[in-house]
Structure formats: structure tokens, C-alpha cells
Length: 182
Image 1 (tube, rainbow, N blue to C red):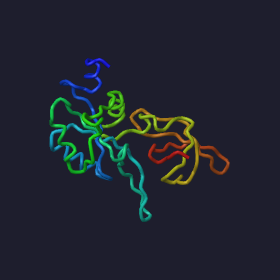
Image 2: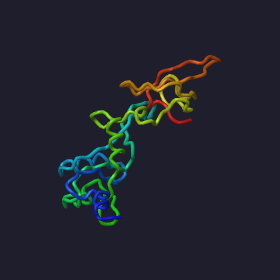
Image 3: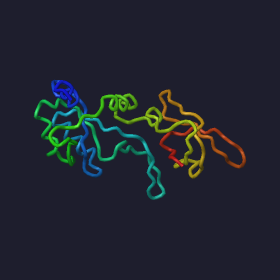
Image 4: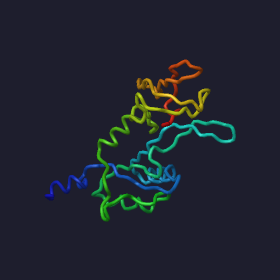
């Protein structure tokens, strides 16, 4: 690889790129807070899911990639070396000497499928698709198995699920976080 392409590959120069940070278990929020206080531009993609506890069901936000967050910075500045000493961070992913950049298209896709709070729509990311066999996790149809009949992407994170109950097939609109792969 010639030196010019090597510099582009590693993001050397004044160009800011996105990098991956590995956090402590359940430490994404803590690491995010401390990194932002140090002046890093960070992104933690999350999605809505349901959690059951003590006969109660709550809709909560979970990291899309548990234990990983993304940070954008200029690698040519030595400021990035402070990341490994940040509370909640295990390490910045590197090749041994330099941070490993994430392809820009990956982050662009995640940002495009997320709202201003970093909450990703599972339908816009392509996690749920037409024809997918699903199991309903919550709501009045909990425990039912069905098939995704349609994905509603116009500003809503909903899917139409084809359920067969009492010998009749019904198309039921559900939030995408209420279903999981069967």
C-alpha cells in the first residue's frame, strides 16, 4: 500500500472519523457521559425493547451494540489517547498503535435510522423485514407466533403481523420492539 492510501485508510490528517470504544459491562452511559465531558463527539445507538419484571412490563432503551460506543475525533491530535483512561471505558479499539476507524457508511446508516436521542428504528435499519417469522413478546397477543406482513416505515417503528387465531388470520399492527425472531 502506498503512503498516500495508507494515510487515507488510517484517517491521518485533519479529517475527523468515527472510532469504536469498548466499554465496561453496562457501562455505555457512564463512558458516554465522561467522554462528552472531555469534548469528544460520541454516539450510542439504542433501540426500544420490552423488559418484564415482577409482573410488570416496561419499554426501555437498550444499546444496539452492547458494550460499544462510537466517538468521532481527529486521530492526528494526541487527545484521543485519554480515552483509555476514561471511566467506563475498557479500551479504544486499535491495531496496536493507532485507532481503527469505522467505515463512514456504517455510521451514516445508523445516524439516518436514529432520532435526535440516538434511538434507532429497527424497521429503518432493516432488522425486521416482510416474511420474517416472529414471536410476539408483549401486549394482548403475547406468546403468539406469526409472520411480518408489512413494515411500516413512514415515521413509525411498526410492523403488520399476520396472526392466526381461532382459525382466522388477522393483520395486527405492533411496535417492532414487541416482536422477536421466532
